[in-house]
Length: 190
Image 1: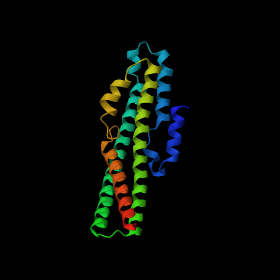
Image 2: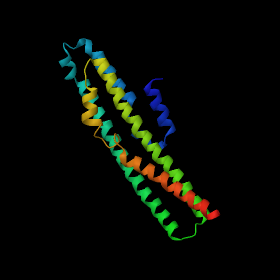
Image 3: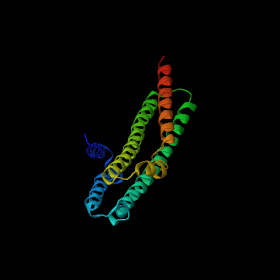
Image 4: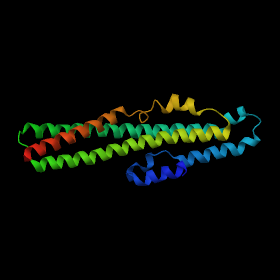
């Protein structure tokens, strides 16, 4: 299956509010096609690299990168805030001494719901990262340039969504907190 179709499926399955923030792969593909359609008329590769269409492709690519990075960073901050809230609720629950089973179950449900949100954000990061790699690979194949590795290294790899260690830490902590509440609930029943 082609990446564009995979991306579209992911967009349709994700949070509808996130739709505008996914990589606009289709538009970038059209830009590449426009560049390569003018390539036979260009006297050299230098002419292609200086063409308005080639410049427009990289301008659009940079705009997409900024859009995705800003959105990811905002969502990651939201996840960090929500994580601190859930951790505080757990702390309060533990200070009560006796575990209230209903409260514990509600908290476990909140952990599961939040965990799903975080994995959706992780998926958003992974798929968009792949999208940049794929569109640059397509660009290089169609134009004969070798821009992918340099652009990925200098631009994409330093963006907020390319390295999501903080999000992975939140996911790990949520798992631990869930199992902690589950253990305490089981102990309280016995």
